[in-house]
Length: 72
Image (tube, rainbow, N blue to C red; front, side, top):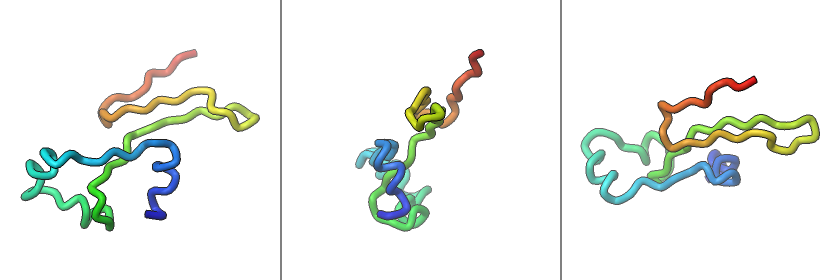
């Protein structure tokens, strides 16, 4: 879908397994929430770009509770 164009381009979308869908069936209707039937989620990501536009730092994790730490 068009709304996921950037996350798909960066490889940040993952598809929920059939097992996870079965567990969540009564609790979460991810297809309705996202507005598409793909049952995909976006991984949290943070990018630092250099002045020329290249990626200088990338932090990507499937665990949304994990955050990168600041480094000098």
